Amino acid sequence: MSRIGTVERNTAETKIRCSLSLDGSGKAELDTGVAFFDHMLSGFARHGFFDLTLHCDGDTEVDCHHTIEDCGIVLGTAIREALGDKKGICRFGSSILPMDEALLLCAIDLSGRPYLVYDASFTNASIGQMDTQMAREFFYAVSYSAGMNLHIKEFYGENDHHIMEAMFKAFGKALDQAVSMDPRITDVLSTKGTL
Figure 1 (cartoon, rainbow, N blue to C red):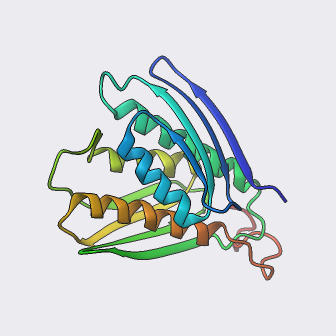
Figure 2 (cartoon, helix red, strand yellow):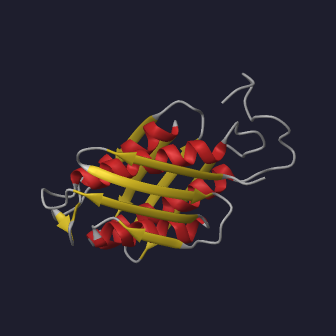
């Protein structure tokens, strides 16, 4: 079974092509025009064992907002498409991930009901060309497009780079766990019979 989502999205602000394989090896081909964001997505793919291709031609001359938010919409859509009917998936996933002095939690339920709880903060307004407030906007867009319940919590941390990187890696590891197949699950893991 091939679990791949392929999405194109073109607006007046961004033109995006994305391919995501849930059963990959962690290879990433990224060009969003925001180098630090590419670095974060690379960590997500590598630690989630996803093969991710994401190219975005966005209006970064304005700022990074449209690019990062729209990439979140497209990635969430690709996740939803790759999951198909969700039969046999574990559904839930979580990771508590340390990176030096920072410790982050990510927990996911692929319930079909979108919701984001985000509890993290940064000292600086940006890291490289990426505005730190865009982390929340990205994960909001992913959660609503994918139909996932997504919780992100920073327990502690001082270095903004470490906090952000731990966040994206924890997201990758939690999602990997949630999309994993379990032979004991013969339909969908829900008492309602649908996700």
